[in-house]
Image 1 (cartoon, rainbow, N blue to C red):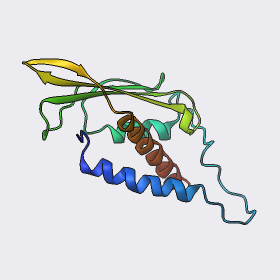
Image 2 (tube, rainbow, N blue to C red; image 1 turned 90 degrees about the horizontal axis):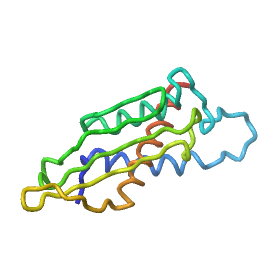
Image 3 (tube, rainbow, N blue to C red; image 1 turned 90 degrees about the vertical axis):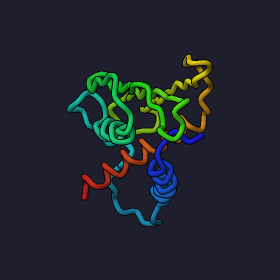
Length: 147
């Protein structure tokens, strides 16, 4: 069951490697830009997390966005390869800093049974993968903006 396009799976794989590399120090004491604490306040929440969330969910129709409150809610999305299954995602950005705990992703899933959509469980790994993709993309956007 893969509701997300292959590009998201590839992005997650590449992103996890990038996250591992970011944590590696160079062994020297040169000053570095603090990527984790980057504060952007022009839209009410961290703009890197906001942009990364919108880009990550761009294949899904949006039902609601609120940049001041940091909320993105998608409408139901059915993968064309699995039309009897659909998913809805909600992203909440909780802070102005670019931090892992500033992001909350929730998902709902439904399956078609007897002509009716019935709630179904969402694997925790699906939500974690989305969070990882968004955080990695936000860090990449931040890195590219500072040179």
